[in-house]
Length: 324
Image (cartoon, rainbow, N blue to C red):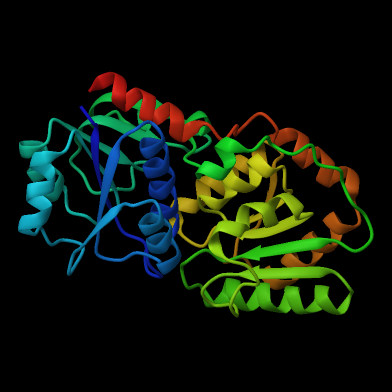
């Protein structure tokens, strides 16, 4: 019998795109194991929507994040697993799913989703997360840490590159994620302009930059070819760590602060606080310092080598199927 999955996820400028991208990774891994999947969402980035449609996934639109429609309830009754990845979906919606679906799971970050929680499975892919983060929750199975980082199919089907550190003119990638943060975007724009004038090849991706020079599916390749990434400290960090790309991580939301902190403690990234005085100058100095220190960039690559292997989504799906 074909295993069925429903994913309830949202991704937008307000909540960021990371939820949608990692849910896409989970869906891809589920499909690769012979399952079928449906996604229910109030907001989806167009790039993720097109990727899901390209996988043959049915998408059920919802008028708002707290809405429960008859088609959604019917899906809960017909599926083997319902997975939630949204901080803003009310706990009552999960309860409705639990009444109808054999197994319920959630993807979370340091217990940021709505409470209370009563689940069969909880995935938190972050560095530094510990079981105590979820000690007040009822969860049958906790999958914690970067071993379960949800990366798209590309990262499972490609060998992690053996990176050679460049000097001279570099390729530098700026990523703002899906959320708006004027201070960060203005600082990134200013730094990107200066680097272009210095002769570096700069690629800037995000809702507040101009259109990217490649499509969504090509971003993993760009990461592999990038010498330094300046990025919001969200889920994209795990893709960059897999690629061995040295990272300057800038948390643009509270849930990103521990990610940036732990990456810096591991020596994988430099972490900068956008709320600090002189942030723009700190950003410029940090970029300049890393450009001029290829040995530091190589050390960052080496430090992250064993953190993310790209197989996290496979492991999560294997756990789900074993429980079914």
